[in-house]
Amino acid sequence: MRPTFFHRGFRRWFFALTAASALVIAAGGAQGTDADGDEIPDEFEAATERNVAVATYPHVAPYGVSITSQSVGAPVDDKFRLRYEAGGFDVDYLPDAASGRVASSFNLEVGAVVEWIDGIPMGVVDDGEVTRVLPLGSDQFGAIPVVWKNWSDVDGGSVDEFTIRSTNAEITLVLVIAQRFYRVSGDKVLTPMEAKLEIHLNHSMTNTNARAGLELFVETDDDMAFGNVPWDVVQQYSVDESWINVTGGGDTPATVFFSWSNEATVDGAAGAVQKTPPEGSSGSYRMLVLYPQSPTARPAVVHVASLGVVSAAFADLIRPATLPGDAVVFGASLVGVAAVVGGTMVLAKRSRRKD
Image (cartoon, rainbow, N blue to C red):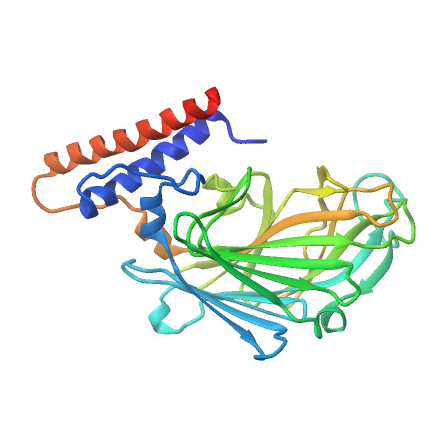
């Protein structure tokens, strides 16, 4: 279900107020802007921008990617690492970047393309209903170079995109990471603490009564939970998603996650995604993601997922600032700037409606 107007309005007010606190300190009350139209004020984006570093390997025809993203200006800066090679993604989270200690991590492998026929039509994958399994791994992803593009968003943030195609051209993975918030669709704003993983599947079906899907493997030494509402949805950066979250760190819990939209498009039409809960033991889990059925022999599937972290540094950066001295003057300035920013957003919304 899409967010209500009240929820969208509250989110805009919250960001306006948070951005205003930064403006009072840094800019003496200048009016907020939203150059990229993602509904996140530019001042808020600047305050939460991360340093992103990318390396591909080997130097010629690279087939591997290593990405680090570190917060800037938090009381304790954090860092996460995302590495890709041969159809597998490693995500590590360091709540204290300077310590070098990984608190939580997992590996996600896009293991196989599958075909599923729901013999007993109850939406449950029963034994024997997966009729075909085509392994991916290094056979399909190992020899194909990663195509890397980089550009600057209109608000000044850097965006990196990596395109990974399988040898048989049936599956393409597109990984996107940004320094700042970056709108990727009408329902999703990509946060600086995650990377979008867009899956394109064009599989030649052996049976048009079957549904195409993917077999995924998740491996971790930390605690894994499945099915709760993702952090991004709670914060209203996304809607209608599920996730797996992995938490480590002992007395100071740290969480990394793999989330995905509960809808995919097949031949341009949106439909519900069927998934099986992860099953396994000793830290290695298998799950199936199954897409809506298509009448065509080679359906075109697009499914959006994310890999990221629940950032402690981000939470610290967005806490309302406090200043010594005259609290009344500070409070009045904060409310005044919030009113200017919030009023600008309301007027902009009314203008869009008139257009």
